Image (cartoon, rainbow, N blue to C red; front, side, top):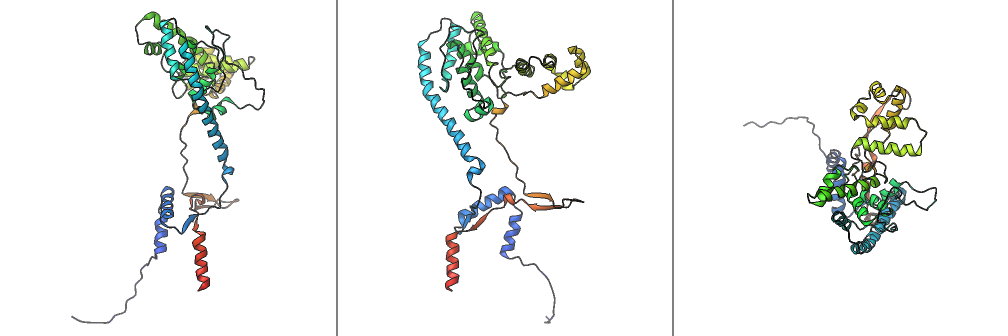
Length: 360
């Protein structure tokens, strides 16, 4: 064994604890960073969130809370009025067995009491309709906007049904159809299958009576807002909306052409074969193009505005911005400042630390 003395130079990187933490935090995503910050706030009493942010009213939170409170008041009124309407329904007896089957459905929904009930009629005809609102305010909100703050899609339809002058049996049939709608506002099941499932019998006369009741109730359902509700298929949904437009604009020459197109197989409409559509409708090609433009503006899913789907907002971790306004663009990658945590040392501990340094 030989001992010797030598001189050697080497380099190595020494990471301080602060640098190690910075490297670790840079690897975290926005969600992981938010969880890390929450954990640090729970474990470290010296830290607190920076509260120098915009007040809540700037984001319309008070208005949102007011809307929720209004919906709660409507629901409370529904429970009170529901008991009264249930007692009143128990006093009337149907004379036909099919009427009894439909009336049973009324007990599943008692109304919300937000609209005064009109006197029940023994029969209803073409003159029966939605009672008009006496409010002449020119700034009245749209029906869809009101519905967004007052409940779900079916609740909105039930409120409109309450203002109709109907017998108890016909009202129950309308409620049953409303509850049979799918999430898009369509009536997928046929009236015959609905009658078969409700009656639970093979009696032909009773089934025919139920189908007759449902047929009349369907015409009322399709007269409600939003236009197109209660349609059995897409073609019928578009025709309902076009007929409503035709009532508002009877002089419009394009709407009848659009109605002819909607009566044709939808495959022709999807292919946009203007020449073939023009031949099928016996119209010129220019009118067919205008009619297709009108059709594309229709709502294929009437219940879409009432959908309560979660909104998943993607927050980017980094942003790519152009720092040069003129000439060749110069893009720069930077961290998203909106996702950076805003923390500070608690004021009490910060003042105590300053006082300790001053005394020293």
